[in-house]
Image (spheres, rainbow, N blue to C red):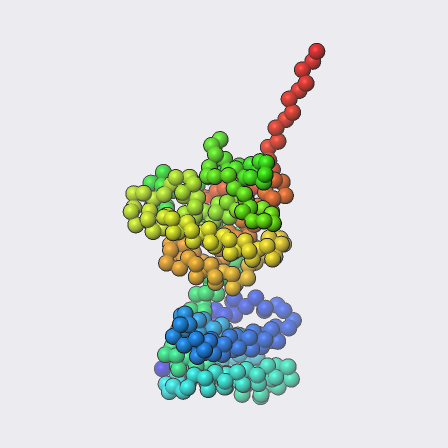
Length: 372
């Protein structure tokens, strides 16, 4: 069997290359290849060190192989496209070799590629890239997987994180989002499509949520010695509802659980799902505190998004692509910073338009002094 899929994969990888316009393009690709090859070696080392207790070794190794393959293909596509076409016509490697030996050969081959890029040596680059390809094949074969499988998974991950459509000027439109999970439920069991929530800060740094003139939930404080304004964290749950179509916490607060469907009520809208959501919010908040609450940030680091995916695995929201999580996080913290700065305010939400708008607190006008 030949690797004819390789050219199609190269085309897809080309469309997702965020370094394409960088003057140091080739060097960045070489650095990326070097780093991902190191990650492949690290997974093999962890497997040997932790033996049977290492979680999802094949999944982790497959992901790192896919990332390594992406950088390899991009380098070939930019610096030696004839080699890429030649590799696509070669038969797949059928023999297995010890994985550690194959991994070390991969590391050595990548080192030669980096040297070739830096010295601008075309012959050394072709030799190095050819060795990288063979080593990738051997590592994949030793784990009982194929490079095509790793490539397919990599494309899925890349599209979920950096969709090709995101280059549009009007990105994202409401139709670009994953469909709302409760679209076919009764209206009273849907998350409200349009909503206004008021955040009121009272004495002793307490925050009250009000919806349609009614208090919602309990009064919240920071629950930590050093104040960090976590008392406003319900804005994150509201942001999840808007940009993910998911929030067991908001369903509980607004009493719109999907009671008609027992499985959804217990498994997706139940207490455990709510605890998971609170845990996700706490983990993201801990990261955000180190990053000025994502002030001026245009993206979230992928390791955080991967951690979130681990938390929500097995729940309906796991189907939502990573870019929506990123948008939910950044938009949630944009409004959080405004709530913190103004000590409260009004938030208008639309699940239809997928928007959150912030409005400053409505200050009461002082009563006029009666004339004597």
